Length: 561
Image 1 (tube, rainbow, N blue to C red):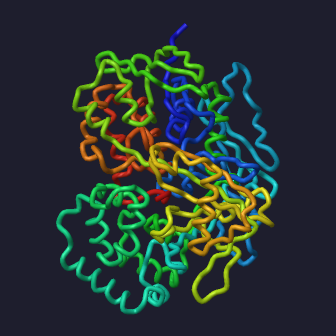
Image 2: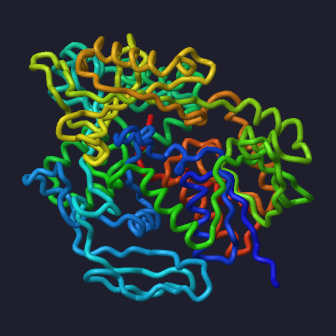
Image 3: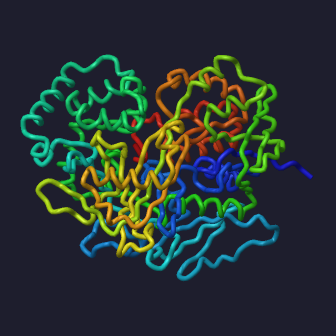
């Protein structure tokens, strides 16, 4: 009996699950995923608290990669009818009549499903392992497997005023900032254009050159330092290039004017910078629904996901990974031979666990890599109480998330889950479900604080900035996510040393956000996994091309921070 190649995959996040699916549908390689938690999706999971769902960090499903977009829609097809909160006057939603869903054939000899695609649909075999079904586009009020088309609104809440995000100077913004302050911002921007800082190594210079020093100090510096816990002068500009690639104050203003004049919405969406998109796609029950659907397909096709198992050892011989050591929750260890190894684990852990021991410089760089951890405080509210100067307190806002610029509180952003999808909230008619986002380190007081104290802190902070009243809080919970953000300081500037070391191994694939120590969005993470499988199919043993993802001129999908 011939040996079927085995690919061990560390982590069941977007990169790991994409790799498993691509292997099953395009190769004869058998994927085996080890996931240390009991959750699917990594940072893109959806946490369910009493029927109220939390999206960790916020995941807008938008990409300029057609490969990624069609991949998403093959699992969760686009909506064909209005959602429960869609107003009759909202004509911008792109409904479709039909959808094409791709499914893996079960890995059971002789068990080939029929060609009936369901009501009003047909199915066609695609290759040896998958079939495509043409269906009537789903109605989100009656069906769960559906991708919603949602409006995007993100704003900055600062001194009880709302400002657009990304910031742009309009008449309304000028009035709220004050005419003198706005004039000084304009002078500062002109100065930055005439005399730009020559050294853009670090983030402060990157922002100053694109927005001017005064606007940077008003809307970028304090929030960014709240996110990362260090000065902008210590953060490599690479992070800014990924977050606001191609964006500047001038471009933000130009896009605002174009929106007033454009009659071709789809073309405008494709041409604009991702930070400026006005609509996005989103699974009915949050991003975790996508990855739970993918995981279900992977296991049905014979792939295996072992929860509560973590890779604790990676063994190499010459130029290849030969096997890994895995530990379960009871502390039992076992070794698993592999033909390929996909690592989405933090680079720091991979290097530390590899045997023979990597060179000293590689270990030094890996050990110096840093991360920012993340926690969300969920608050279930009767209503909001948003105070904006000159207006009566508002019981609700339309934002997906709100950036809290005020320096007197530690909360960084507020998500309003009702506005991501009405189905994220158990009683959406009578409650508002919000998430307060805090950027922390695992040795911080906040990370160690008991959940009930964090709920109280979040309540007090939102009362302080005029966003809620404590008496409207019905319930709360806390969700912690370690190593959510690979940091662009520490030894990040020497990451190439680790890249060169990893390139020695022909069957080692570093993919995903933590796997590459790069602030990838989920579409970037997916593309690295897809390209890794491309390399296997092509017989390519040099994996350096994976590092080209997310270096292109256009930016794919806006996500968090």
